[in-house]
Length: 145
Image (cartoon, rainbow, N blue to C red):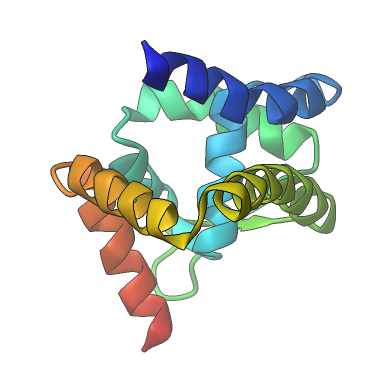
């Protein structure tokens, strides 16, 4: 029960922002991961989000139509589409993430750093079983090298 209400609070302000753009939470997730891994392939994004091509196709198309993302054919293989945020997409994603980072910062500032570490430990324990988390780590490691 607490997790549900906490999640609702965490997503409420971003949901209000994205509603003005005519997009939904799924679009926010896509923007977030493209921001984290610029040039990510559609297939890798599918793996991270743990969704099907069919589930991702319409949201990607809408984000492209709204000029929030751009799809570029990979030089190394024309079959791959690389995803990037447009300048407008970067601004929106930054605004959405800032709202949530500030929300968490306010909470952890009031509770203390030991609570932040405990929360991170809980989130890591929940995330480690997800194949999407493993794929995300792989993509981040690729970008660092």
